[in-house]
Length: 311
Image (cartoon, rainbow, N blue to C red; front, side, top):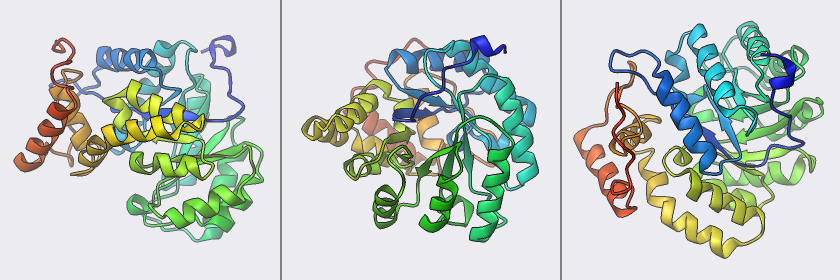
């Protein structure tokens, strides 16, 4: 993609970004028409940026070529209307750098990079990993801290060292530790974006000075989650709480089993995609599926389903 078609880099990452699911066809291939439709639905719903190829996008099961294809489709469909923050993380620094450079060539606006998983690097190893990645690209980088998935925590002191690197501009914080979140929001520079990695923590994080969320629930309800975030950022916490209370059952049920199993099951019931996973992910158990259906019924999401997706 030529530079003239690239999204304009935002001065800060703020608002509601959607961690996009990756729809598959019945034979397990990328469902490219559905990817494009979901991107269009997100933009029409008012989300502020899109995040393809994260955990919610089943990235561990995507080949290198498929990751590039998904991102290319998202960039092309969005056509500069919203920023694109593409997932470019790995347990291997060299692989992360290669992927980051290729994402940059596709015209993404920024990169989301998870802490290296399985290796369990030391704080110094984390610093050197992210510094090497930052030096390999001109794109802004949002770090992703999710200890429950990776086995390591990006502590505040290491984060502050990384925040001094010019193109490391924010963090998706999913430690689940509100004390750590509060410490980060207090310590980082004002221009450094602290984004919630957990929908249920969005409202308290923004109240502490955070910039928004990279959301799972906005896959199902882009407009409502965007309104929650916008209201909170504007200081209208009464409206934000109303949206939070409405969406909280959906936020909870989306993690009744490992993400993205529940959200894809829900979106299939909403006729937004086919319920197809790649092993080792499998459909939810009957009890979980029943709870997902109940929440969708309570929110009126089944009654407002889109037309059944066709082959």
